[in-house]
Length: 75
Image (cartoon, rainbow, N blue to C red; front, side, top):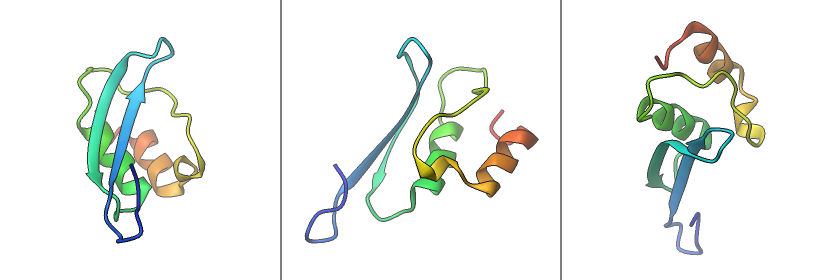
């Protein structure tokens, strides 16, 4: 998964609860930035409840994403 020497690849994004059960999964090209994939993944979740907290790498430390979460944009 991810970028290859030929600039092609796939990114797989998933959101799981504290028990490890998948709540959302998204597969996309390796080109888009992860913050846009986080939003797309949350939009495709299969559970009705919005996550209270996201834990991830630096991509989750994004003011625009944090504000969307606070505004309830993914409900």
